Image (cartoon, rainbow, N blue to C red):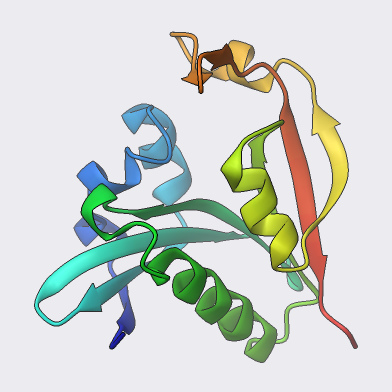
Length: 152
């Protein structure tokens, strides 16, 4: 798997791709402001992207990470996450945070890479999205906040 990951201007963020991980374009546009956007390409094809926002001098939050369905289960999401973890560690970050639903493959994905649950944002998906969000036929209500603390 040959993968090139590079930062792109938030103006050039692949919205259709980011909408796969967050169904609200308004929310995405809000957190793109002041964020870093990275795009992963395999050959000439964009296969994934992520958006990371600063949470102060030593903390960053992964706001969105997505891989096109045709390229899922190929290791691209894992490669993009691992690259992001290393990138922000090298910037001097002390931790990388992420919020996700309270069940599903995303939760296991982050935990496999060292993220630990640090808090629960009750009713996040009900309070921040105009339409209910379902995963595997179950409505999402609460967001789990996870943190990866870098060894220091």
